[in-house]
Length: 309
Image (cartoon, rainbow, N blue to C red; front, side, top):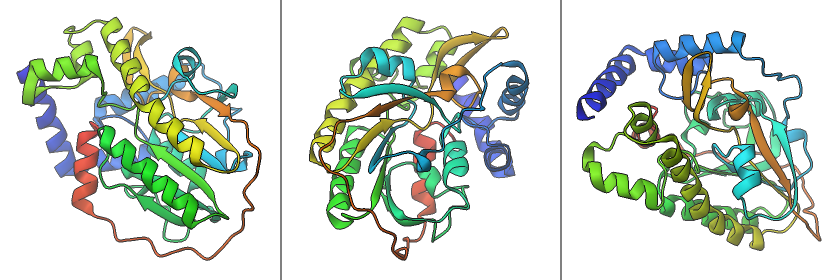
């Protein structure tokens, strides 16, 4: 396992230094570890997998005051395991991973009635959102772990107080890997510093599909109480959704799919839960605030922690 991890890290380092990863991610909008073979497979799947995208939802055209995005939360798992209460349906996302979702929903638009709160590094990297896309973007510098999750909630609550007349997009980075909870914690303790991640453990035959799925569900159970606490504090109409879903070992055309970025139904289909509300926010547009300069090292560290480097 250590050898596999070393080889994987070596390939990513080479592609990163050559600029291959950046080209694949920004030009081809291919998610996950941006390896050339992976990119070719994804582009091939777009021809082979019959997933209609004609009904893709433009999230900015929907009716909400607060849009809660739980990164990589599949629609079927949301229906089975989520504890949130409301009017649940599903939508087809514009993206199969975060960058594609961000580019296709927000790029080249003027959204001065909206504030984004996020720990997702792709709002800063590769997408061309510019200084004047949103009224403001509030970044949580740390991407992974439950503490990062709590920090996003705190920033979101503060934003709701600071901008009472703006729509809020609150983009959390879970249940995206690295997973949290009992299942993944046990495996981290076993592998220590060479822990290769849940998807590589599954693809290498070290863990079963049941274990991978349980790790994903553990993460859901860890994060939902934190989100509920925030929802209880927000005014206006809230919607809980995701930027894209996740593959957990599904087989397509003889190949096992894990993670996201591939045009599978599991990646495209996302939940859309509209919560009950008593009041609506009176939304207005204002000139955008100046966005802080990008911390390149922080972005690189976060992308690496998420498995993109």
